[in-house]
Figure 1: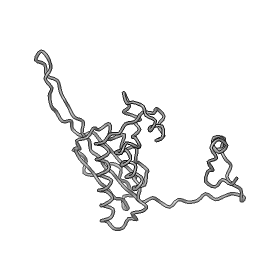
Figure 2: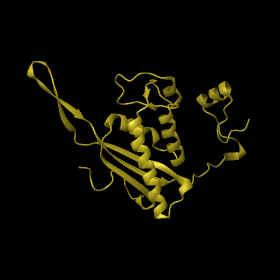
Figure 3: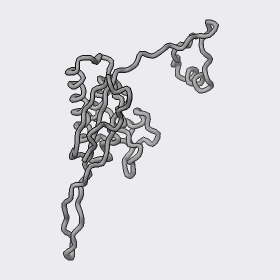
Figure 4: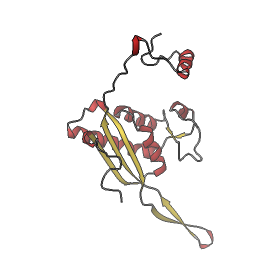
Amino acid sequence: MVAKSYSELNSKADRVAKAKGSHLRTHFKNTRETAKAIIGLDLAEAKKYMNAVLDGTRCIVFRRYNSGVGRTAQAKNEGSTNGQGRWPKKSVEFVLGLLKNAEANAEAEGTLNMDNLFVRSVVVQKAMKGRRRTYRAHGRVNPYQSSPCHIELILAERDEGVAKEVEDGRAPKLSRKAAARFLRTGYKPIGFKA
């Protein structure tokens, strides 16, 4: 049974919207990777990403539970180091449903700025396995178990960032890595004046 309280709530719990699903009939490992992919994203961006995965135009990168997972170019686009990714339809549908539920909860609360919400936390835990049996040759019986999961999702308002003060009116010095990237791609870091 999932705990009555949320795993990731702390002292900043006053301005959040929550959603929870228990004993969901979707694979734990796929759902864990799907949930990790949206942590830190804005709400609209997370929903757009989940819909893109359902369409097959973007994938979910598998980082921990990646044994036997095939490689795809889409995984490289998502920042994968191993190139392994999949499109776990059922897990994405459950996470997308919880995102919509948390959004509705935030709207019902009325104190949150809907345009400033982001996914602060998603916790996926193993639920009790469903037990079936499969009948084998020579009268043997083997277990045939499912791996459902519990999901807890927390949306919060993004804090306003504080701009770093520029010293002596000069632009901040670039690191060697940032300078190399600038020379190679033309990408200009924030605050850099060329």
